[in-house]
Image 1: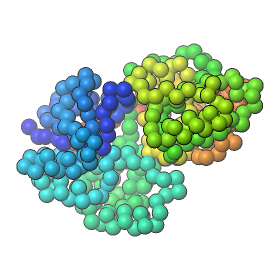
Image 2 (image 1 turned 60 degrees about the horizontal axis):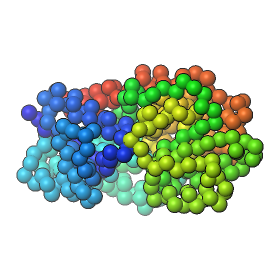
Image 3 (image 1 turned 120 degrees about the vertical axis):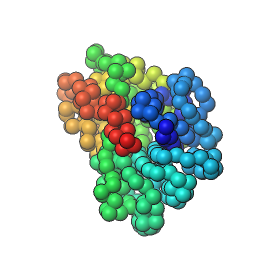
Image 4 (image 1 turned 30 degrees about the horizontal axis):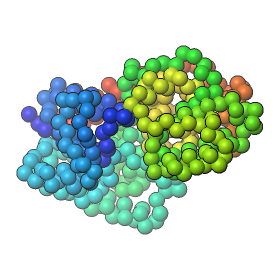
Amino acid sequence: MKTIAVICDYVLRPDRIGGMDRFYVEYDRRAKELGYEVHWYFSSYTPFNFFEGLTIFSAKGDAVESFFLEKNIKNKYEILVTHFTALCTSFYKHAKKMGVDKIIAVDHNPRPLEGFPLSKRVKNKIKGVMYSRYIDQFVGVSKYTKKHILKDYGFYLNDKTIVIYNGIDSSVYEKRTQPNKNKFIVTSHLRFSKGIQDLLQAVSILPDNLKNRIEIDIFGEGPYENELKEQCAKLNLTKLIHFKGSTSHLNQLFTNYSYMLQPTYMECFSLSILESLAANVPVVTTTVGGNLEVITHAKNGFIFETGNVIALSAILKRIILGTLKIATATNTLIEEQYNLDTMVENHLSYIK
């Protein structure tokens, strides 16, 4: 029996069960059906029922790559897969020296809006030369991601770099059937790069007679939470905007809203967008990352330039007035093209 090690710089939490968590469980099940044993290495994990049956090792908050190397000095894995880790580091060289036959590196990492500074770009090129030889397959989760893997580490990697889109189990998302007029949802890690501060500014400049007709619930937590709450108070928006914290029930909650708002500055290929569309909730988002690979303006959402508070406010105004709307169902695209089964099958095809 061949053994796969999957290393994820990712924290498993019972109050945050989303698309990647479902991917891990389904990947494990299908790999076992193919005759593989799978060992999972996560940054942190305290056991809970959702992951029952998976063999999981927790780094307990330490660097998961170092934890893996220290734990497996004498173990041998035929296949190693990484998610959410840095590419082209010495880790991959050490893993190869341990006897791993095939290494697959999956890149979920967004890039800065203005690109990396020159010093970072030079270092990436050097790391590409030094360590890319130890990675047998690079996987980008969008065309945007593949483009930046090649740009960052070297265009000579094109032949061993592919795109596998993220996918979700759309069946677990309750479908919106009611208008839910002027109710908006934000699902996001609360950090500056997610652009929620722009959303607050956009709402603040709406006319009062429109501003008081909307409701925005923000699900998530993060290092920028206090700043956002302070901004919300200064702009007198606390009656309209509610911080709800993390939840494991977004699959049931999306249906209560008319649109998801995602004013992000950085994105690879957003699972939140897929989840919202799967619930038949269109998305208002920015032009960054892989967003334009799934959102078509005025068909399943609305697009504005990152940081353009005026444009976002204008979209919100027209939605509230009813002059801007998405009339068609948004879930069909997700079910047909961005489903979990396809994602899992595509990932497993590279370990066979």
